[in-house]
Image (cartoon, rainbow, N blue to C red; front, side, top):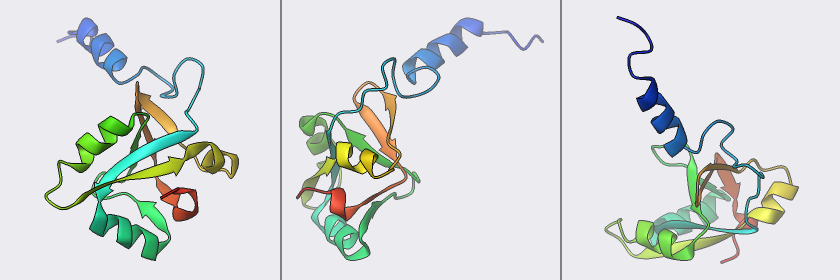
Length: 116
């Protein structure tokens, strides 16, 4: 069979994931991003000194607070949303990239960039 069996499907998949590059057309990342978590995890992050990834190996951030609250409520513990100063984090060299519209990822975020 040919490798190009379903080229339209591959294009569709690429489009859904934000295309190549992952940062969007203009590379814009908002100054404030939100991370949905639980109170217990937030305390562990503060003790560790950084927000670290769980099983996914990436910290997911949203540009909408309501979306972060929705994520936080998926957990069975007390929900909490962390406000991340992404502008300051990027100026200090932290890599944050856009995955798709409204969703961003980082490998970890030092708690000095968490505003609450």
